[in-house]
Amino acid sequence: MQDHTITGEAVVLNLRAANFMPRLGAALLDALVYLICWGFLVYGLAQFTSRFGLDVAATQAVMLLATILLVFIVPLLVEGCSHGRSLGKLAFGLRVVRDDGGTIRWRHAFTRCLAGVFELWMTFGSIAVLSSLFNKHSKRLGDMMAGSYVIISRAPRLPAPMPDVPPAMQQWAQVADVGRIPAGLASQTNSLIRNSATMHPSALATVSHDVYVRLLEYVTPGPPAGVDRMTFMVGVLAERRNRDAEVLGRQRDRRDRDAQYLLRQ
Image (cartoon, rainbow, N blue to C red; front, side, top):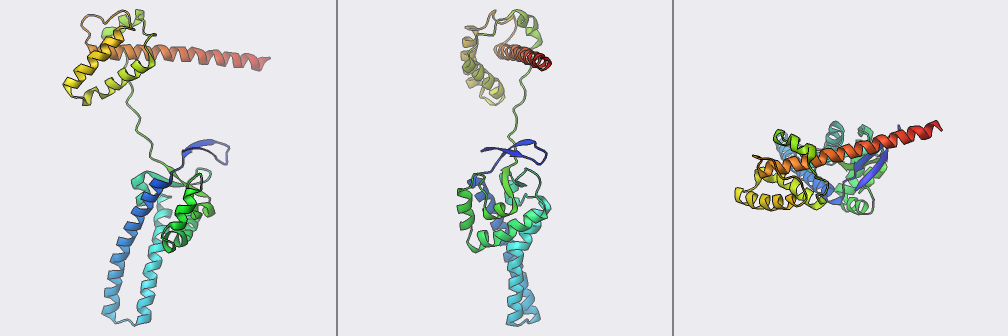
């Protein structure tokens, strides 16, 4: 989901609100970690109470303290110190932010964790699931009260830039006609170049031959002497990209000139 968040300085941010499934996965992972830690804590407290011979009331008080640590104190410390990135959220690439896109503070973490005692632990997450399903930002009650929501903070890895026209094709590029290549064929050639290093040699030879033959139908003149198929395809796409960039640059300059002219009127 793509959302427009406006900060207090009137800056528009494009933040992707996390949907229900990654939030559920992060919450289950957090709950599992907290329960394991709680189990070790209870075991340690049980050894402590048996060693010092505490009575029933003291034992209940110790167990109550352990429960408060599990459902409130530890989540508060984790979320407050990490600025909204618990272990589960780190694993799923999520982060809690304010409604204006800023980093949450301790008061936001306090409100979220306090509400989480009821909607996450006391109701086994059912209230949080229902509120998340019917909110456009997948907010639970704690988010609504704190003025926060969860975003996808892990950006996708950008592909490596395509290489420039090979030196052996520089003179060819000055007279070549590459403007008739269909968009689908250009996309297929680009994908082949990017994945060529991981393809099996026999599959690469077959696919590159087919793409090469199809490119020759739309590109003139043919490849210079001594240029192999992959180098030729790299040069064709690089020159096509360079010419498209030049066209876009001229269009942008024309719009800027028109805008300046209109401002002077």
